[in-house]
Length: 223
Image (cartoon, rainbow, N blue to C red):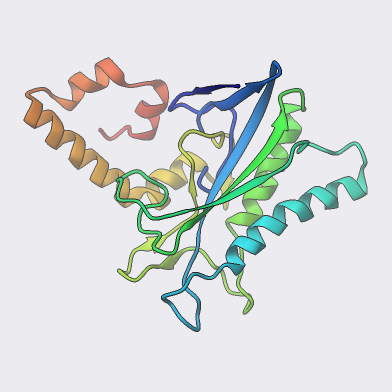
């Protein structure tokens, strides 16, 4: 097994979700789609996580899969098992887990490379549409919500996965990330870059010329 990774994802998806993220197993490329969903506190006890959000997100993928295949036995864009993990909080500026006191649910949706890419992207968009519009048992939107410090938390992407083809509630995903989900974090990230550059005796423009990619220039264009 060999892992290939780059900051500029090519084959992967969102809720924490792009970049090129894949692995080769028996010479077959696997396409990965990951999403990171924030777990709020229980309404009855805000100090404890509400795991029903995780359940809703997990079963949403399964329902979409079976709704498709029950209509058309050949409509199977997801052809490998999904995976899920719960991740703790983080203090890293651009981490999708930042501020998620009760943890973050990361769900991976996988399929072989041979699947039709257009159909795969449609499937990922359908999953994303459900994930970013999850509702609680009172039929109220789950995301965004405020954590104990008052910070609004949104579904976010895994930076190293595939998500660049997606839209979030009609907004292109990069715009959603820059202007909403990561807006404050990107500001803190920029401030940190300038502080490091000043301490090192060089400019952010110098670093940009040396290390930037088309993706970083687009994503962090205000640098």
